[in-house]
Image 1: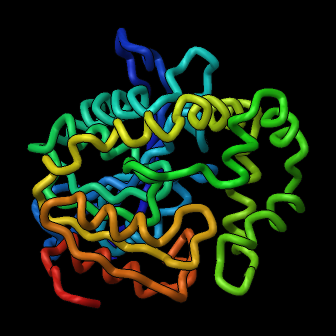
Image 2: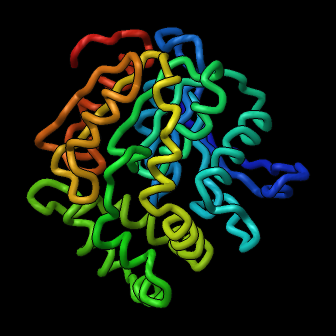
Image 3: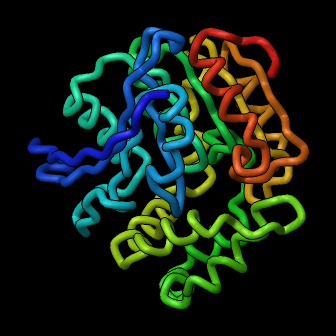
Length: 284
């Protein structure tokens, strides 16, 4: 299996992310994976600690997005969909990668904003329980709290590890707790910088902005796999089907026994994604 390694760099540019310290993980891409480099994008409130089990099988790149993990969290960064799409472009320039296969989960969906602007740079696409860049989505209870001034700040400040452990149980079937390693990773990096990034991202993204962000999804004609844990309390299963319909050449894998992080409940998801990246579009 490819060996996963850690990296750090700096985006010395004149844009909004000038001088931004960036952390990422990488692993060599085996010959079984398609011609493009896999690029894994995490969601909220996580970081690249999500991806080593995937990287060890497929190779590729997995950055901590701005405001998360070990990447910079300065107050003057652009924590919006467009800001993150800009970061992805600058990051790929930093690592000198032109074409990728894109794997997105939750708020890693900002990668779809980059993909719609640069479809020629995307070879394959995997969407797993992603924030809907689609019409008709209404934010879940926790997100509505974060979007509320003052209440969001109070909620963030009151989030202890015990609170996080309890509140995230809803994300899995049978209210199983999240793994201790997951909780440790998230809480260890859940500082004021990450809390600020989360609040700004959610507050900049009302439903109409989300729908507009996916207006050109039909341009994405590359092979796509939509993986959806149907026991997701945050994003209804119908949005998995809506993504599959919006993307031009997609297949849908619905998992009734998986939640918001489907690979935690169904470890076979890892092999299914790796097989797809290698050009196998059959059912897993």
